[in-house]
Image 1: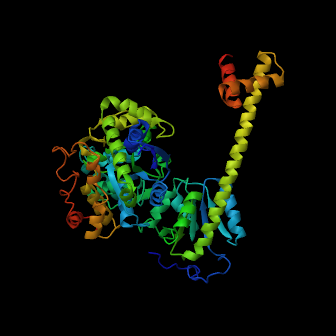
Image 2: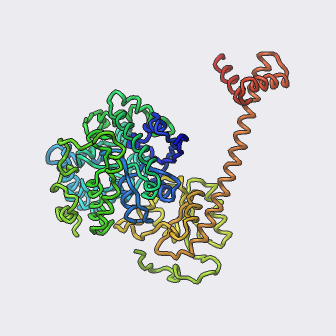
Image 3: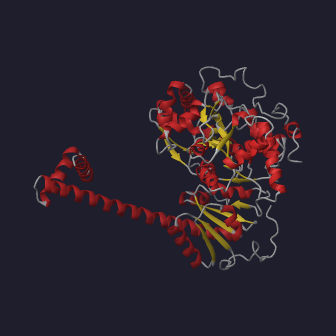
Length: 390
Length: 214
C-alpha cells in the first residue's frame, strides 16, 4: 500500500458535500494514502449513471437515489451502500414574497410553526382554486429526493395533496433561484446555498428549515457500489476514516471560516464564503428585510452521530416512496432499503463508538406531525395520514 | 406504464425490423449548444429521420417537450436539466406520457459509450429497443465528432492567444530595451530555457509586469 490509490469521486456543488470536499482539500484522504480526483457533476442522473457503470468509485449522492438504485426503482438495479452520512438536515423551504404574504395573512398563529404554515398553505390553495387560478408550483431537485419528500410531508400535514392541489416540478438547484424570480415556481425546497441566494436577491423568504419539519433528516450519503465495497474493503475503510476526520474538523466552530473558504473555491461550490458560513453557523437571513433565524440543527455534519448511517432513516425514506406511489410496500424492499445504510462499515472505521445522544429524538426522526416513526412498521406510518387516500 | 397512444400511428413501437428508419419517429434534441445540436440534427436527417426538433431553451422544459410530443428525447450530459426529464418516469398528474431512459442492460459497452460521449436517450411510450439503438449509435458518433472538433478548436484558440501574448511581450522588449524583433524573441527564449519555463509564460510575465508598471 505504498502507492497512493487513485479514486474518482463525483460531487454536486452543495453545502452538504462539505465532509467530502474538506476530506480531500484538507488532505485527510491523502493522509490515508488516497489520491482523490474530485469531479463536479451537474445532475443526479449523471451521478447515478457514472457511479453505476464504475466511472466513479464513490459519489456524493442524495440518500433516496442510493435507495432507489438498490431497489431498481425508475432505473437499472445496482445495489449501493453508504458507509458514511454526509449530513443530517441542511435543506430549507423558500417561497416567493407574494406567497409568503398570502400564507401569513391567513395563518392562525406563528408561521414559524410548520403546522400553522401548512394549514395556512391549504387555505391559500383552496382560495386559489375557488377563484379558478392556476395551482401553485413548487420546485424540488429530483423525483427520488429528500426535497420532494420534505415538501410533501410538510404540505400534506396541513391538508394539501401534493399530487392534486399543487404542482411539484423537478428543477436543477442552480435554476431554482431564476425560476422563483421569473415566477415559474412559487416556492422550492433545496439545499444550501440556494435558499440564502434567493433571500439575498430579495425574491424569496425562507419559510422553514427542514430541521423544523423533521429534527433528523438524512440528506446526502457517501455512496459506493456494493460490489466496489466488497472488492475494496481496505480502500473503503480509509475513505470512511478520512471523511470522519473531515467531519470532526468541520464541526469545530473556529474552523468554520477555513471550511467556508475551501468550499467557496470556483471549482468547488463557487459562491461567496460568507454565504456558506451562514449554513455552517446555522444563522440564516430568512427575509429580504434582513430577519435572521438561528438553529443549532440547520446542518449536522458530524455531531450528534449525524455521519453514522442510520437504517431508520433509510426506512423513513422508503416509507415516503411507498406513500407517494413510487414503490410498492414489501418486507423485502424495506430490508433492502435499510441495508443501504451501513453503520457497521462506519463503525469499522472509528476508533471510538459514535452513538446518538439521548437528547436526540427517540424515533430517530422527530417529525412535527404524526405518530412516532417505527422503522419496522411502514404500514402503520402510512395509516396515520389522510393524504394520499390509498 | 406505456399506455396506448391514441390518434397517432399505431404501427409505432411495433414496426418491421431492418427497414430504413421510421420517418415518422419524432425526435427531440435538448442541447444548449447550437452547433452540436445542428451536427446531430444533420446526422439524423441524413439517416432518414425527418422529424427532428431542437430545444435550446431550458425554462419550462417539460411543457416544451409535451407540446412537441416526441417519441425519443436526446439530451447532453452536461445539461443539468437532465434531472427534469427523470421526472417524466413518474406517473403523476403533471406527467401525461411516462418516458424511460434507454438502457440496454444486456449491452454495458453501449451504456459506457453513451456516457463517455456525453449523451443520453429517453424513449416515450415503450418504443422498441431495436428502433432506438441506431439513433443512439448515431448520437454517440456525432457527439464524439463534435468533441474532437471542439478540442481542435480549443488548441487552435489557445495557440492564437499564445501567439498574441508573445507578440505583445516582444513589442514591449523592443520599445523598452531598444531591441530588434529577433533579438527580443531570442531574449525571451533564453530566459525560458534558463528558468525551465515556456516562452509564453515568460511573455505573460513581461506583459503583466509592464501593465503594473504603467
